[in-house]
Length: 285
Image (tube, rainbow, N blue to C red; front, side, top):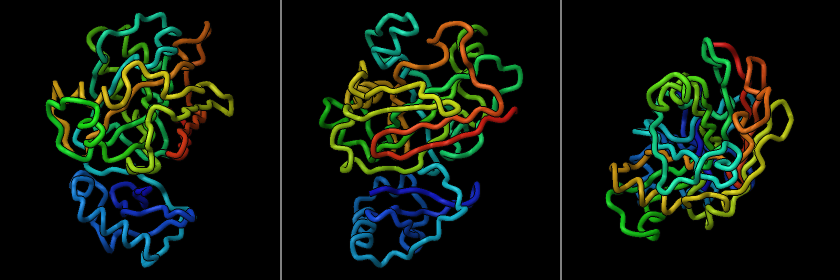
């Protein structure tokens, strides 16, 4: 299933994109798409049955904003330097263990919402990422099978980053990762049954129409199952939590000088096979 949330900020309604590409209203069945729904197999089965029967009312998508596909996210766990080609382009050593940091849930916006370049920023960068959405409480998972069983589905994250704030201003990475609007998410939450192999997805990003990132999740140093298992050794993952699994080569930081960092007025588009498309225009904060 392709689950999504549509409507104005703070007033999104749950919806489903059916196999014919028709937008369907789920608000008569469930109040929202959140961790509680993703952990409820009975409710998910009701949605599947309703979608198959054709009884869900259609929505007119014209002019309708798409919001983040998951509401009330508890935490966003991010994995740094998780692609072999990205590590090479930045001159970083391949990590022995996943590099883990957190983004605040209030960085999340819709897939086509405006992204704000922070005040004083000179190194705002792009990063297209496969995002994993958790559907079961997960702690101390033992193997890949348990890890993948905890995954509700997948979506696209844009892990926008300010490199000067992240690397040159002292402390940890948080200052460069948690700026306002720095985690567009969506458009859809695609349930795990529709993504049989998360390590075979094409990942692409364009800036002002120019292809900048063109990779594959096969390049991940730590694949999805290992990332979920590993993170569960250090923190409890709850339904509705999100894991951003890293970005392939092609970010501005990895390019020759003068590095083409983002500016107000730029347009970024990104997509992952089967998971949809994002488009954001950048404005000054």
